[in-house]
Image (cartoon, rainbow, N blue to C red; front, side):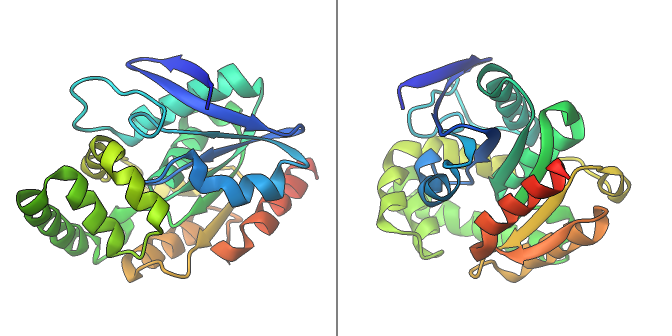
Length: 249
């Protein structure tokens, strides 16, 4: 991606496709902007689709040292990108950690967000089993780190989730951003009251491979945010079009 936007501590690489109302795509953990290729292909005929590498991933830089990020930091990056590139509010679609970024944008930068599609949102505080799952994952990562180093640890984490070969290739270059993300997973302080106060059209999408604690968190989010609807991830394009119709009235 040849285009970039400067944010505090980093340069964010992005690509914009098509014309129309803005759609911002925020990738998840151990992904890149390229992960959104199918969505870009399906939506860029009717929208201006903006996909970017979050700090430390792909062609985007990160500060040194870069050991931890927060949802708020990632949301500020996304807000700066929207201000610079979109020239107006957008539908924001994010996956796992990226879904939290989209929700934080709606909470703190409401004027930049007209709708949110949250795929497998990692609202870990709303899952009864998430703490145990994260503890197990952390131990497994520490063991992989000792045995093979950071890139191998990320590959092990991805292989346990059935990741495609492309993501496994990225692990070598993006391991620093992965561990910064992992350290920042529980950094979004959101209450049930604040979620009930969100006044943004919201589609909560659940992937076929989502684990129990992720499904539990997604269902909690959909229950708390007024008017939110739940759909399988396979319906993502349909849900994005539905959000656009809802917004246009």
